[in-house]
Image: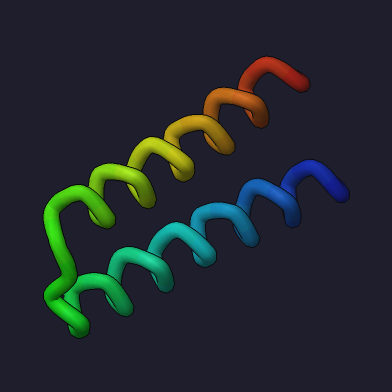
Length: 49
């Protein structure tokens, strides 16, 4: 159950970062960094299972 909540929290966090970034209209590099970080977190979650 705890892993399930961590996954949901991770997805919500990534979405929040994405929307905040869209609102600020920052550089493409910032979006790429956030995307890579979210991908790494998702990858770690998959490996832990």
